[in-house]
Image (tube, rainbow, N blue to C red):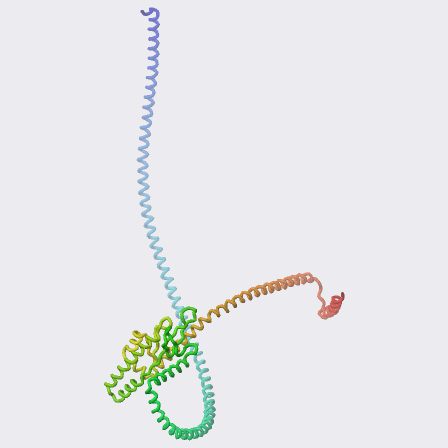
Length: 458
């Protein structure tokens, strides 16, 4: 049960609270009304500002449009003015260029005229000089012609005199020689008769096969002796080791390496005189059958001999891979070489080279050149040694030369020092008064002996 005393207090408290709440609500309501009024005023101000900004914007737009129109008109006017100025400048430049071109053309024309005049003057001067030179040359040629004519006359007189004397002398000598020759002819007729008898003996000698071979060997030996030295070939050489077959001649070629064992080039001489004589006789009689038979016999003879030479004498590496079959007469060699492919067949199948006197001489000459080249190569090592010694001595000479240069430089520096001291003495003596020349000679002459005496006295 509520206390009756507290009830009025509670009611009073409620009333007070309600009054406080009403006061607060009224004050809040007043603040809201004030705020609404302030907001209304601000909204009015904002509306006024917006309207002012809109007016300013319309004014600004109108100003910008006016400025743009003005700028457009000014740009158009400036473009027109620039175009007009450009056209004016172009016209001025064109006129100036035309004037310059006209000036250059006139200047070039004047220079061309000047050059033409100068060229004409030079041409005239050259012609005058050439005329002067030609006149001088003609004058000197006339003098030389006269001198030559005079000398030729003198020479002609001298030659005529000498020819006359020589002719008389030669005619006398010729008549004497003719008489001597006639006497020798008479003697020769008797010798010819003896020789005719000897020819028959020679035919009988050549009819012997062994003698014919000996004659070919003699001719081959003579040719080798003329073209090579005795150390470069040998006779009767056994070219195949262990064989008793000996080739007539063999050329000594250098072997491989430094062993000193030679490599031989076999050469054998063959002369089928009977077949060759039959061919010659048949050719003189125009006997075709005998000519063909003789040619076939010659072919068979040389083929067989080439085969024998290959089998007996060719043995690489002790020999070359080919041998030489020497034909002692050019006529027989030409006959065999005139047959198509015969020499190539011998060389290809039998490894034998067919040679006559002329081409064997050429081959020996080539071998001689090869021997000389080989000798030069063998001596090249000695030359290199000599050059090495010379190089060593030259280095020593360079050292001596460098020492000599140092001595010369030292002497040059000493002379330079003496020059420097001389110039220093001259600078110190510059203020000293010079004596006359005769007094100086007298004083120096009197001082020099006393100085020598003082130097010689201990």
